Image (cartoon, rainbow, N blue to C red; front, top):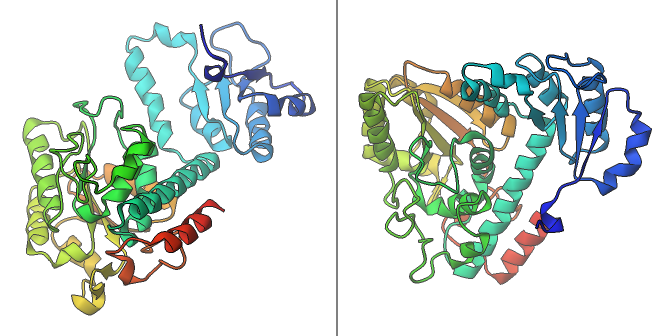
Length: 389
């Protein structure tokens, strides 16, 4: 017997249903299901053009409620429905007449890459949840890195809740994308993204850096096997990711998944980083995508004062990489950059993401001193108050 908390109640409406008849019901329901045509009951019925406008009106009035569409969903209407504000699409029973049912469903999954306004808002909310967890973790641990994890929260939110091919309930799924964290000191953002997406309980985040915890101060696979790599010494992650991508190319699997390597800008001071850049460019590793956190700080100060990196984009291009530069806080820019990177077949891609260290807490932003320290109780309370407002 189902508990009430597990039951969702929705209301199905037709294109001809009056908006004013629906409005009083919205506070009482969990979702709206829009029927694509008034004439239901037959296969192959086309979508009524009025449905797009109806969804737009509903979305403008109710920004958070899920909207599903049934009848008339196909390859042509799907992107338009998502653009209008639909969040769920029901494929008709005619799909069972296809010779490749699974393949047909997979075709529709490409529309998941489209970012509607409601999806952007949802991802921004996830990023904020991740930032809150980062502050709580660091306060409990009384040590750790603050600026980098806060600055990368938007990128990790969109990866774990929109971009990655992964299954938190089956973390060793063979076909999963690989996530390599090279700058292991920002692991609070990785742990928080993993916990919020379902890899383990959010409550475990408060064990960060505790003796015997799975959540070490730098990622360690011996303690948390679902990690793809152990990291700590800077400049090694891209070499690890390059090895994985090269193995995929040798095994003919470089079209099945992507290897994403998250890196810092400061670790470009390491010679091993450039050796990996050269090797990957030479071997044209198409499924390797590096994401550089270009926050312009490192533990002793600003990168351009300590060891100037610019023109960093031209340097990557010189080693046969496709280069994309974006804001690391714009969900649509991040998404479009990954889509572009996935479409490049003749070389690896680097996404240089310009971020604000300490993003989300004004007192922490752009201050290199927050690279390697945790907030005290008063600072954490201030930060949490700002993030929760």
